[in-house]
Image (cartoon, rainbow, N blue to C red; front, side):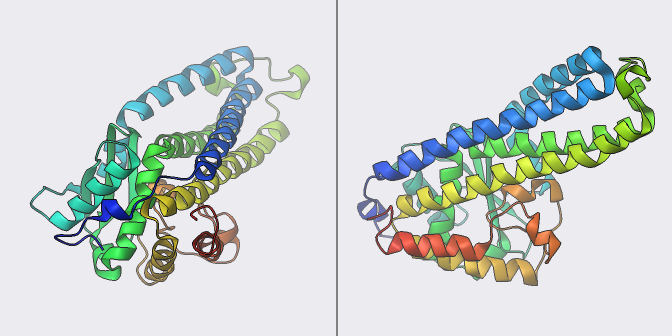
Length: 312
């Protein structure tokens, strides 16, 4: 679609107001979910160490968010062994990203290539001015240029909506909550420096620690899933508006899901929520707890957009 000599900017109408409203709704839902995840982290600290535990938890969350804010893009790219794509490499791909970024009114993100045959892509970065899009070698062979344009529009939507930072923070917090709950089960309140008396109101008891070990990770995971799934639907809608071709993204998602099943990618499981389709395989219960909504539902919504939904 964006080969040499083409001018895709002419094909891009303004993003409809209803899509912007959809985006604002996602902002609100994400803020509520992130607040819930942070509150859960503080509750774990309070349960296991009283006021001192809550203080440690709060301090840790602030420090963690600071590190994630400044280094999330470098961490995600390094974990996936992504290498930068120079301007002379795949010039049509650079041109496509630049034109989509111009259409979205944002700086052009850096481009990276992940050396794996598994077809996939993700975006990362703390804001549009410090962002990157990474594509795998596999996706360049599986998708045609029209479909890849739909994928890139989806990823740029994540960047513009600040989804990349939110998803990284959510994944990190959820992982830390799980590890803290496990440590607390074995070490009790001493993990936070003593806290309350072990017999006070049952805090520090074996049953209390066991309950925290079970409940906290599940609650953290459910909150993370809610954030990730909400973000994917939002990026699908705004990405479809950005490329003005919902069917291209729908076709791409179907191909990518088949590709992920044929060639699973587990180089960096912690970054799985960032990819456009889940790079990990699994059915049954694993699908229920997937960080991504079902591809079937995403494709259905995109087909509806193409037939008079938010795009027209």
